[in-house]
Amino acid sequence: MKKLLPPILFLFFIVLILASCWLLGSRHNLAFPYSLLGIPWILIGYLMAIKGKKLFKKLDTNIMTFEQPDKLVTEGLYRFSRNPMYLGFVIALIGVALVSGAAFSSFLWVVLFVIITNAWYIAFEEKVMVETFGQEYEDYCKRVRRWI
Image (tube, rainbow, N blue to C red):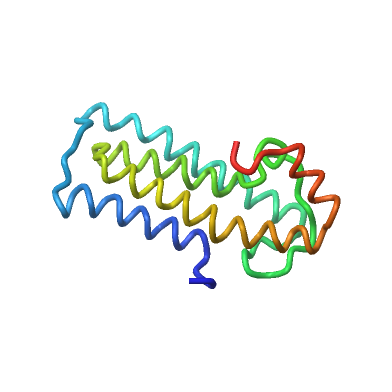
């Protein structure tokens, strides 16, 4: 799992949410047209993830999870969250859960995504960031929260 990139995990969880709601027949708690309330969540989450990615490109820094970081990004959305791309994924998954009918099982998948992301990706990245940037990163962690 170490080399499974976060966007691939995100797409996998979209499939899990949709499969649990539509293919497995989970109970739908949010009927159409109310399920459309998920669309803004999907758009906001997607835009957050894309904005974070574009900032990495603009600063010409490495975005790959399992490669050595070369710059500490603290501007843009990174002023408010140390992980705005992951936060964007979570917001988008909430939107997918709403669009799918907000079955209880959908939100369990979102929680599982957060747990995996927090325990696996973020823990790995933060360890590497401390090793690479030292006190500068630790100071950043004191100023900016991990998620929100």
